[in-house]
Length: 160
Image (cartoon, rainbow, N blue to C red; front, side):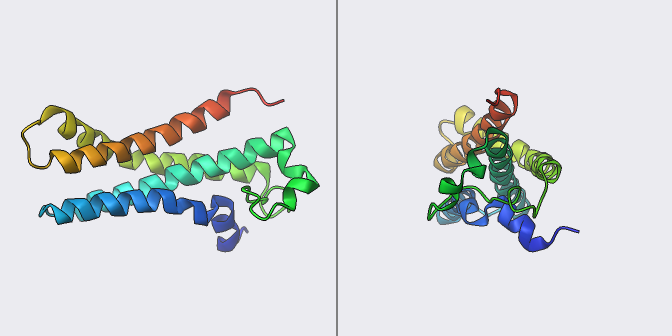
């Protein structure tokens, strides 16, 4: 059985702050503009973006292992080695990393309708006072989508 700590390390938890800060900043902007914050949308977006970032991190680890980059002992000495090294240490196998990445990506898709709705509002309502909030939220949606596209591109790219 894989420990919770191993899963957190595989996700590279410190890097998830990029997604978390984005959601928190947009939510703060919504509240600052005087609009009610929808807790369900916040939770879906927060979990979805963290999951998307986590899946990209896991896919990166998978392909860095396949290319041999993470096996390089000089790379392991780097003070900020970027990879989680769960595959190299045997804490989580390649198959486990791939399954965990797929599960995170599937969970991330829950946030997609929220991001798409925000983008739609930003583009279709030029006189809506919530336009600024929606514009920032659409940036959030682009962050989410670009992570999934990057992960998809890495999945199908050849590994040498």
